[in-house]
Length: 204
Image (cartoon, rainbow, N blue to C red; front, side):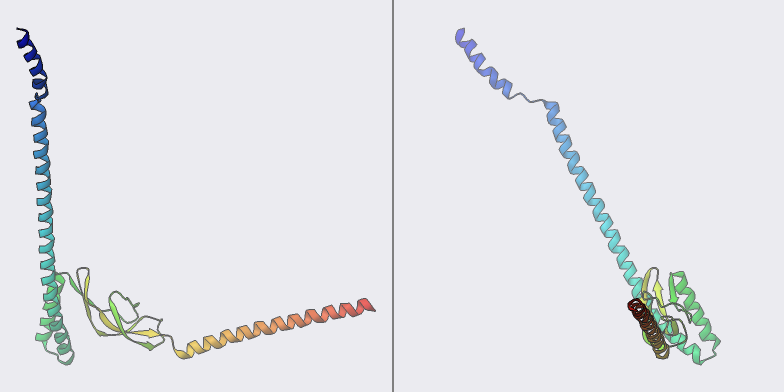
């Protein structure tokens, strides 16, 4: 009997050590499965977004390429209309411009005297003019913008100050400096003469 009790006492700790809470195990497994699910869901969502962005870029690139090809057609129509009174050409150009507008494509055609915009204009040359400096003198080629992207800047000539005005400005500045210097010399001489006169009177 004593041997049996000793054996039971020796086996009891082992039984206690192997005892595991099944609820805690299930909760742990559930947390792991939930984490794996959330990770897989996030990865799927990220992949969906990447695919959507790539598709948008592909469509945008295709539209831009098509629009750039149409720019050459537009240039040819404008050139033809300038040398011909054909109503057919004018109608075709009008229809093409209407298509551009429907697809958010606009002309960049600044008016004479507009300020030069480096984001939408390309200056081919600067010409002396009576106009305000750095303003548009003439448009050599229209530009085009699609949505918020410039497909081609407008090629323009811009105004610059005449050399005569620059020379006149420099001469006026030099004249002012010369007059200022002369006044300072005269003031200095007057002051010196006054000091000398006062010195002579004092000695007398």
